[in-house]
Image 1 (cartoon, one colour):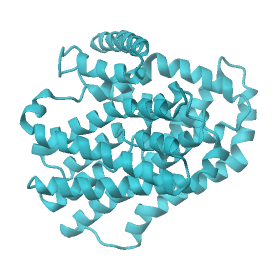
Image 2 (cartoon, helix red, strand yellow):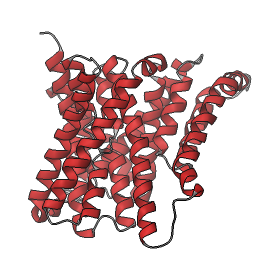
Image 3 (cartoon, one colour):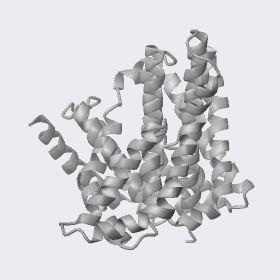
Length: 387
Protein backbone atom coordinates (compact mmCIF):
# COMPACT_ATOMS: atom_id res chain seq x y z
CA UNK A 1 0.00 0.00 0.00
CA UNK A 2 2.84 2.39 0.86
CA UNK A 3 4.51 1.70 -2.51
CA UNK A 4 1.29 2.37 -4.44
CA UNK A 5 0.72 5.62 -2.54
CA UNK A 6 4.28 6.72 -3.32
CA UNK A 7 3.86 5.85 -7.01
CA UNK A 8 0.58 7.82 -7.20
CA UNK A 9 2.25 10.88 -5.66
CA UNK A 10 5.32 10.53 -7.91
CA UNK A 11 3.34 10.15 -11.14
CA UNK A 12 0.91 13.00 -10.41
CA UNK A 13 3.68 15.22 -9.03
CA UNK A 14 6.09 14.74 -11.96
CA UNK A 15 3.42 15.22 -14.63
CA UNK A 16 2.07 18.41 -13.02
CA UNK A 17 5.58 19.74 -12.38
CA UNK A 18 6.64 18.91 -15.94
CA UNK A 19 3.57 20.72 -17.29
CA UNK A 20 4.26 23.79 -15.14
CA UNK A 21 7.92 23.91 -16.19
CA UNK A 22 6.99 23.64 -19.86
CA UNK A 23 4.52 26.51 -19.45
CA UNK A 24 7.15 28.81 -17.89
CA UNK A 25 9.82 27.82 -20.41
CA UNK A 26 12.27 25.71 -18.40
CA UNK A 27 13.18 22.03 -19.01
CA UNK A 28 10.47 19.69 -17.71
CA UNK A 29 13.07 17.49 -16.02
CA UNK A 30 13.79 20.32 -13.53
CA UNK A 31 10.22 19.99 -12.25
CA UNK A 32 10.59 16.22 -11.97
CA UNK A 33 13.82 16.54 -9.98
CA UNK A 34 12.26 19.18 -7.68
CA UNK A 35 9.23 16.92 -7.15
CA UNK A 36 11.58 14.56 -5.31
CA UNK A 37 12.82 17.42 -3.11
CA UNK A 38 9.25 18.54 -2.32
CA UNK A 39 7.75 15.08 -1.72
CA UNK A 40 10.83 13.69 0.03
CA UNK A 41 12.42 14.04 3.47
CA UNK A 42 13.72 17.56 2.70
CA UNK A 43 10.20 19.09 2.79
CA UNK A 44 6.90 17.16 3.00
CA UNK A 45 8.25 13.70 3.87
CA UNK A 46 5.49 11.94 1.90
CA UNK A 47 7.82 9.71 -0.15
CA UNK A 48 10.87 7.92 1.28
CA UNK A 49 13.85 6.54 -0.66
CA UNK A 50 13.04 2.89 0.06
CA UNK A 51 14.67 -0.15 -1.52
CA UNK A 52 11.71 -0.71 -3.86
CA UNK A 53 11.86 2.94 -5.02
CA UNK A 54 15.58 2.43 -5.72
CA UNK A 55 14.75 -0.65 -7.83
CA UNK A 56 12.11 1.24 -9.84
CA UNK A 57 14.60 4.11 -10.29
CA UNK A 58 17.32 1.73 -11.50
CA UNK A 59 14.95 0.24 -14.08
CA UNK A 60 14.03 3.81 -15.08
CA UNK A 61 17.59 4.93 -15.82
CA UNK A 62 18.33 1.66 -17.67
CA UNK A 63 15.28 2.19 -19.90
CA UNK A 64 16.15 5.87 -20.41
CA UNK A 65 19.61 4.97 -21.68
CA UNK A 66 18.23 2.10 -23.80
CA UNK A 67 15.91 4.63 -25.47
CA UNK A 68 18.86 7.02 -25.91
CA UNK A 69 20.67 4.24 -27.78
CA UNK A 70 17.62 3.49 -29.93
CA UNK A 71 17.29 7.17 -30.87
CA UNK A 72 20.99 7.66 -31.63
CA UNK A 73 22.79 7.41 -34.95
CA UNK A 74 25.62 4.85 -34.78
CA UNK A 75 27.41 6.31 -37.80
CA UNK A 76 27.32 9.79 -36.25
CA UNK A 77 28.71 8.49 -32.95
CA UNK A 78 31.60 6.85 -34.86
CA UNK A 79 32.18 10.09 -36.77
CA UNK A 80 32.49 12.08 -33.55
CA UNK A 81 34.55 9.52 -31.61
CA UNK A 82 37.68 11.75 -31.38
CA UNK A 83 35.80 14.79 -29.99
CA UNK A 84 33.97 12.48 -27.57
CA UNK A 85 37.23 11.08 -26.17
CA UNK A 86 38.81 14.54 -25.85
CA UNK A 87 35.72 15.99 -24.14
CA UNK A 88 35.70 13.05 -21.72
CA UNK A 89 39.43 13.50 -21.02
CA UNK A 90 39.11 17.21 -20.21
CA UNK A 91 35.92 16.50 -18.26
CA UNK A 92 37.76 14.01 -16.04
CA UNK A 93 41.09 15.78 -15.53
CA UNK A 94 39.74 19.23 -14.66
CA UNK A 95 37.35 18.13 -11.87
CA UNK A 96 39.98 15.73 -10.49
CA UNK A 97 42.57 18.49 -10.24
CA UNK A 98 40.42 21.36 -8.94
CA UNK A 99 38.01 19.41 -6.69
CA UNK A 100 40.84 17.41 -5.10
CA UNK A 101 42.80 20.61 -4.42
CA UNK A 102 39.76 22.40 -3.01
CA UNK A 103 38.86 19.45 -0.78
CA UNK A 104 42.39 19.37 0.64
CA UNK A 105 42.15 23.09 1.44
CA UNK A 106 39.24 22.18 3.74
CA UNK A 107 41.62 19.95 5.76
CA UNK A 108 40.42 16.77 4.06
CA UNK A 109 43.15 14.11 3.79
CA UNK A 110 44.82 13.71 0.38
CA UNK A 111 43.44 10.17 -0.04
CA UNK A 112 39.84 11.31 0.51
CA UNK A 113 40.41 14.55 -1.43
CA UNK A 114 41.65 12.62 -4.49
CA UNK A 115 38.63 10.33 -4.32
CA UNK A 116 36.32 13.36 -4.12
CA UNK A 117 37.97 14.53 -7.35
CA UNK A 118 37.14 11.14 -8.90
CA UNK A 119 33.51 11.39 -7.73
CA UNK A 120 33.04 14.75 -9.45
CA UNK A 121 34.77 13.46 -12.61
CA UNK A 122 31.75 11.23 -13.25
CA UNK A 123 29.06 12.38 -15.69
CA UNK A 124 25.43 11.31 -15.71
CA UNK A 125 24.20 11.66 -19.27
CA UNK A 126 20.67 10.48 -18.39
CA UNK A 127 19.54 14.00 -17.38
CA UNK A 128 21.22 15.57 -20.42
CA UNK A 129 19.62 12.99 -22.73
CA UNK A 130 16.19 14.01 -21.49
CA UNK A 131 16.83 17.73 -22.07
CA UNK A 132 18.47 17.19 -25.48
CA UNK A 133 15.47 15.07 -26.51
CA UNK A 134 13.09 17.77 -25.30
CA UNK A 135 14.86 20.36 -27.48
CA UNK A 136 15.32 17.92 -30.39
CA UNK A 137 19.15 18.07 -30.17
CA UNK A 138 19.95 14.43 -29.36
CA UNK A 139 20.60 13.41 -32.98
CA UNK A 140 22.99 16.30 -33.75
CA UNK A 141 26.77 16.68 -33.67
CA UNK A 142 26.67 18.14 -30.15
CA UNK A 143 24.19 15.50 -28.99
CA UNK A 144 26.36 12.69 -30.39
CA UNK A 145 29.54 14.09 -28.78
CA UNK A 146 27.79 14.54 -25.41
CA UNK A 147 26.51 10.96 -25.50
CA UNK A 148 29.83 9.52 -26.65
CA UNK A 149 31.85 11.55 -24.13
CA UNK A 150 29.58 10.53 -21.25
CA UNK A 151 29.95 6.83 -22.11
CA UNK A 152 33.76 7.17 -22.36
CA UNK A 153 33.71 9.16 -19.10
CA UNK A 154 31.69 6.44 -17.32
CA UNK A 155 34.05 3.66 -18.43
CA UNK A 156 37.17 5.69 -17.50
CA UNK A 157 35.84 6.68 -14.05
CA UNK A 158 34.85 3.08 -13.29
CA UNK A 159 38.45 2.04 -14.11
CA UNK A 160 39.83 4.81 -11.88
CA UNK A 161 37.57 3.74 -8.99
CA UNK A 162 38.74 0.13 -9.51
CA UNK A 163 42.35 1.32 -9.29
CA UNK A 164 41.63 3.25 -6.10
CA UNK A 165 40.02 0.19 -4.51
CA UNK A 166 42.94 -2.02 -5.60
CA UNK A 167 45.60 0.33 -4.22
CA UNK A 168 43.65 0.64 -0.98
CA UNK A 169 43.68 -3.15 -0.70
CA UNK A 170 47.41 -3.17 -1.46
CA UNK A 171 47.96 -0.75 1.44
CA UNK A 172 46.17 -3.26 3.63
CA UNK A 173 48.30 -6.09 2.24
CA UNK A 174 45.41 -7.92 0.57
CA UNK A 175 46.08 -7.39 -3.14
CA UNK A 176 48.87 -7.26 -5.71
CA UNK A 177 49.43 -5.95 -9.23
CA UNK A 178 49.26 -9.37 -10.86
CA UNK A 179 47.63 -10.78 -13.99
CA UNK A 180 44.37 -11.23 -12.11
CA UNK A 181 44.31 -7.54 -11.25
CA UNK A 182 44.91 -6.49 -14.89
CA UNK A 183 42.24 -8.94 -16.07
CA UNK A 184 39.66 -7.61 -13.61
CA UNK A 185 40.54 -4.04 -14.51
CA UNK A 186 40.65 -4.26 -18.32
CA UNK A 187 40.24 -7.82 -19.61
CA UNK A 188 36.59 -8.31 -18.68
CA UNK A 189 35.63 -4.92 -20.17
CA UNK A 190 37.42 -5.70 -23.45
CA UNK A 191 35.73 -9.11 -23.52
CA UNK A 192 32.33 -7.44 -23.01
CA UNK A 193 32.79 -5.15 -26.04
CA UNK A 194 34.14 -8.00 -28.18
CA UNK A 195 31.09 -10.04 -27.24
CA UNK A 196 28.86 -7.09 -28.09
CA UNK A 197 30.52 -6.80 -31.53
CA UNK A 198 30.09 -10.54 -32.26
CA UNK A 199 26.47 -10.44 -31.06
CA UNK A 200 25.67 -7.45 -33.30
CA UNK A 201 27.42 -8.87 -36.39
CA UNK A 202 26.27 -12.50 -36.32
CA UNK A 203 23.40 -13.02 -33.88
CA UNK A 204 21.15 -9.97 -33.41
CA UNK A 205 19.48 -9.81 -36.84
CA UNK A 206 18.61 -13.54 -37.17
CA UNK A 207 17.51 -13.58 -33.52
CA UNK A 208 15.08 -10.71 -34.07
CA UNK A 209 13.80 -12.39 -37.26
CA UNK A 210 13.09 -15.57 -35.25
CA UNK A 211 11.30 -13.61 -32.53
CA UNK A 212 8.91 -12.13 -35.13
CA UNK A 213 7.64 -15.65 -35.86
CA UNK A 214 6.44 -16.09 -32.28
CA UNK A 215 2.69 -15.47 -31.98
CA UNK A 216 2.29 -13.41 -28.81
CA UNK A 217 1.22 -9.90 -27.82
CA UNK A 218 4.01 -7.29 -28.30
CA UNK A 219 6.64 -10.01 -28.55
CA UNK A 220 9.24 -7.77 -30.23
CA UNK A 221 9.01 -5.13 -27.51
CA UNK A 222 9.14 -7.79 -24.81
CA UNK A 223 12.27 -9.32 -26.36
CA UNK A 224 13.87 -5.88 -26.74
CA UNK A 225 13.40 -5.39 -22.99
CA UNK A 226 14.97 -8.81 -22.36
CA UNK A 227 18.05 -7.77 -24.35
CA UNK A 228 18.16 -4.38 -22.62
CA UNK A 229 18.13 -5.95 -19.14
CA UNK A 230 20.47 -8.80 -20.11
CA UNK A 231 23.18 -6.45 -21.40
CA UNK A 232 22.68 -4.15 -18.40
CA UNK A 233 23.39 -7.15 -16.15
CA UNK A 234 26.42 -8.19 -18.23
CA UNK A 235 28.00 -4.72 -18.16
CA UNK A 236 27.53 -4.56 -14.39
CA UNK A 237 29.05 -8.03 -14.00
CA UNK A 238 32.26 -6.88 -15.72
CA UNK A 239 32.53 -3.87 -13.41
CA UNK A 240 30.88 -1.15 -15.50
CA UNK A 241 27.63 0.75 -15.00
CA UNK A 242 24.49 -1.13 -16.09
CA UNK A 243 23.45 1.88 -18.22
CA UNK A 244 26.45 1.30 -20.52
CA UNK A 245 25.15 -2.13 -21.53
CA UNK A 246 21.60 -0.79 -21.97
CA UNK A 247 22.81 2.12 -24.12
CA UNK A 248 24.98 -0.03 -26.42
CA UNK A 249 22.34 -2.71 -27.08
CA UNK A 250 19.85 0.11 -27.82
CA UNK A 251 22.41 1.64 -30.19
CA UNK A 252 22.85 -1.68 -32.01
CA UNK A 253 19.08 -2.16 -32.27
CA UNK A 254 18.68 1.35 -33.75
CA UNK A 255 19.77 -0.14 -37.12
CA UNK A 256 17.23 -2.98 -37.00
CA UNK A 257 13.83 -3.26 -38.68
CA UNK A 258 10.92 -2.53 -36.33
CA UNK A 259 13.02 -0.11 -34.26
CA UNK A 260 10.34 2.63 -34.30
CA UNK A 261 7.61 0.35 -32.89
CA UNK A 262 9.94 -0.87 -30.15
CA UNK A 263 10.99 2.70 -29.34
CA UNK A 264 7.35 3.85 -29.09
CA UNK A 265 6.25 0.96 -26.89
CA UNK A 266 9.25 1.17 -24.55
CA UNK A 267 8.74 4.95 -24.28
CA UNK A 268 5.14 4.45 -23.14
CA UNK A 269 6.19 2.02 -20.40
CA UNK A 270 9.19 4.08 -19.35
CA UNK A 271 7.78 7.60 -19.26
CA UNK A 272 4.54 6.49 -17.62
CA UNK A 273 6.20 4.98 -14.57
CA UNK A 274 9.88 4.09 -14.30
CA UNK A 275 11.62 7.24 -15.59
CA UNK A 276 9.56 9.60 -13.35
CA UNK A 277 10.56 7.47 -10.34
CA UNK A 278 14.23 7.75 -11.37
CA UNK A 279 14.13 11.56 -11.54
CA UNK A 280 12.25 11.85 -8.24
CA UNK A 281 14.68 9.46 -6.52
CA UNK A 282 17.54 11.93 -7.09
CA UNK A 283 15.65 14.69 -5.28
CA UNK A 284 14.80 12.34 -2.41
CA UNK A 285 18.47 12.31 -1.37
CA UNK A 286 18.55 16.03 -0.51
CA UNK A 287 19.09 16.68 3.22
CA UNK A 288 18.49 20.25 4.34
CA UNK A 289 20.58 19.70 7.48
CA UNK A 290 23.68 19.39 5.26
CA UNK A 291 23.22 23.00 4.08
CA UNK A 292 23.44 24.30 7.63
CA UNK A 293 26.48 22.28 8.62
CA UNK A 294 28.52 22.34 5.39
CA UNK A 295 27.20 25.39 3.50
CA UNK A 296 30.61 26.70 2.38
CA UNK A 297 31.87 23.23 1.34
CA UNK A 298 28.67 22.59 -0.64
CA UNK A 299 28.90 25.96 -2.43
CA UNK A 300 32.58 25.45 -3.33
CA UNK A 301 32.04 21.86 -4.53
CA UNK A 302 28.94 22.82 -6.55
CA UNK A 303 30.58 25.81 -8.26
CA UNK A 304 33.81 23.96 -9.07
CA UNK A 305 31.95 20.83 -10.19
CA UNK A 306 29.80 22.92 -12.55
CA UNK A 307 32.60 25.10 -13.95
CA UNK A 308 35.18 22.32 -14.46
CA UNK A 309 32.82 20.16 -16.53
CA UNK A 310 31.40 23.14 -18.42
CA UNK A 311 34.85 24.49 -19.31
CA UNK A 312 36.36 21.03 -19.86
CA UNK A 313 33.59 20.04 -22.28
CA UNK A 314 33.80 23.39 -24.06
CA UNK A 315 37.58 23.13 -24.50
CA UNK A 316 37.31 19.55 -25.77
CA UNK A 317 34.76 20.66 -28.37
CA UNK A 318 36.73 23.69 -29.51
CA UNK A 319 40.02 21.77 -29.84
CA UNK A 320 38.27 19.34 -32.22
CA UNK A 321 36.96 22.20 -34.39
CA UNK A 322 33.35 22.26 -33.18
CA UNK A 323 31.89 25.78 -33.08
CA UNK A 324 31.33 27.80 -29.91
CA UNK A 325 27.61 27.08 -29.70
CA UNK A 326 28.07 23.31 -30.09
CA UNK A 327 30.96 23.28 -27.61
CA UNK A 328 28.94 25.21 -25.02
CA UNK A 329 26.02 22.75 -25.32
CA UNK A 330 28.46 19.84 -24.90
CA UNK A 331 30.03 21.45 -21.82
CA UNK A 332 26.60 22.07 -20.30
CA UNK A 333 25.57 18.50 -21.11
CA UNK A 334 28.54 17.12 -19.18
CA UNK A 335 27.76 19.04 -15.95
CA UNK A 336 25.13 16.66 -14.57
CA UNK A 337 26.51 14.07 -12.11
CA UNK A 338 23.27 12.27 -11.17
CA UNK A 339 23.17 8.58 -10.41
CA UNK A 340 26.72 7.80 -11.58
CA UNK A 341 28.36 10.09 -9.01
CA UNK A 342 25.89 9.00 -6.32
CA UNK A 343 26.86 5.36 -6.91
CA UNK A 344 30.58 6.21 -6.69
CA UNK A 345 30.23 8.29 -3.50
CA UNK A 346 28.33 5.39 -1.91
CA UNK A 347 31.10 3.00 -2.98
CA UNK A 348 33.66 5.39 -1.49
CA UNK A 349 31.81 5.45 1.82
CA UNK A 350 31.60 1.65 1.88
CA UNK A 351 35.37 1.19 1.37
CA UNK A 352 36.34 4.03 3.71
CA UNK A 353 37.44 6.58 1.11
CA UNK A 354 34.62 9.04 1.94
CA UNK A 355 34.14 9.99 5.58
CA UNK A 356 30.66 10.05 7.08
CA UNK A 357 31.21 13.72 7.97
CA UNK A 358 31.55 14.78 4.29
CA UNK A 359 29.14 12.27 2.70
CA UNK A 360 25.98 14.46 2.93
CA UNK A 361 27.79 17.58 1.64
CA UNK A 362 29.08 15.68 -1.41
CA UNK A 363 25.62 14.20 -2.13
CA UNK A 364 23.96 17.63 -1.95
CA UNK A 365 26.61 19.12 -4.29
CA UNK A 366 26.04 16.24 -6.76
CA UNK A 367 22.28 16.84 -6.76
CA UNK A 368 22.69 20.61 -7.15
CA UNK A 369 24.90 20.16 -10.24
CA UNK A 370 22.26 17.77 -11.59
CA UNK A 371 19.60 20.46 -11.08
CA UNK A 372 21.76 23.16 -12.74
CA UNK A 373 22.63 21.08 -15.82
CA UNK A 374 19.22 21.28 -17.62
CA UNK A 375 19.14 25.06 -17.13
CA UNK A 376 22.67 25.39 -18.53
CA UNK A 377 21.78 23.22 -21.57
CA UNK A 378 18.68 25.35 -22.21
CA UNK A 379 20.77 28.55 -21.96
CA UNK A 380 23.43 27.12 -24.30
CA UNK A 381 20.84 26.05 -26.89
CA UNK A 382 19.04 29.40 -26.80
CA UNK A 383 22.32 31.33 -26.97
CA UNK A 384 23.30 29.43 -30.12
CA UNK A 385 19.88 29.70 -31.81
CA UNK A 386 19.49 32.66 -34.20
CA UNK A 387 16.77 35.10 -33.11
